[in-house]
Image (cartoon, rainbow, N blue to C red):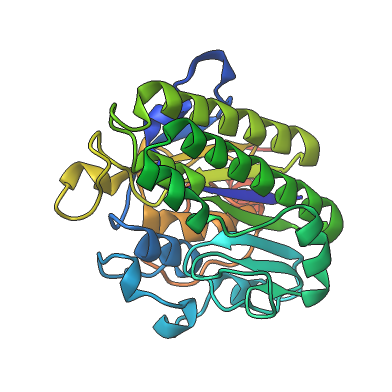
Length: 304
């Protein structure tokens, strides 16, 4: 696999600082976002700016009418899992499992539909409703346990589809993080349960990388969530999410801070696909870039 992209809904740089369990990144930093889920994830699929609104303003990626990531990739094998704002499902050279607003495994949320029986055996679900009862009843251990089940379920689906599809790009999003971080105050989940959730997710991500061995792994979040469980334009600090890279490709400095606009060109660069005219810029040099630079240095006599 060339590229694994993992969305970490609602996370910030704290996610990388959980001791020995933390993922070993080559690069990471703060990521400026559009404060909320739909605008930020849509941006990662198009390279375009979107208004800083909440999820009710975006019912489908098709509403915006922009060329999407999969439109640039042609026959490249690709897999998409649980990306918010991707509904209904698209036909791609691989598999496509929608994110929100999908509620059930059907022809609107899964392509190809022949995948549905296997997903049912894996216990795949879209999960959001499963948190409502524990939250309403204040059963926060049960809430966390449901979140952990969701993380493991998503991980199983990623590993299964990586093996089945053999994609060059696999793009998946964990949304359980957002569900938990919205309940992070001490009278609800609190710091200890949030840390447990992050540790388990980090372990799952490490196991995915160990198993499928992507050449480049790109992590990013769509916003952060403050200590009271809020995000949005009224909470300035929550525009800063996080990004991270595990890659042998050259990093373009200085980029300890990046913008959500940079994620789309970074994905294309990792796949060595031409980047269209977009506002953001890649965090890495592609193999084609490296060849161009090497040829120039050779012509100038710096390389033999």
